[in-house]
Image (tube, rainbow, N blue to C red):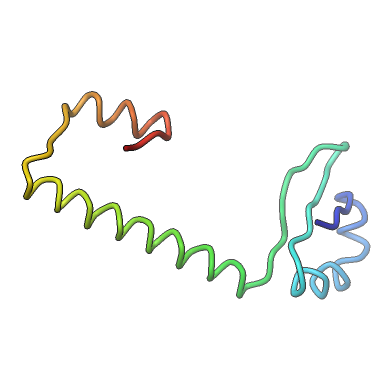
Length: 86
């Protein structure tokens, strides 16, 4: 992934937009990554993937409920907060 400093991104904004159409561009500030600029197509693809994942999890939850595969609510929320799931 190409990387630009925040100052380079500011002074080369038009070029940044063109490059972002081909691949994500990382923006660093004070040497640390702070953002990634992506094309609208890439953003829409990511959002569609997130929606499909959420729909899949809802479908699995409905199937689990129908099958009686239930978990304790506290355990569920702990797993959700930690980012882990079965």
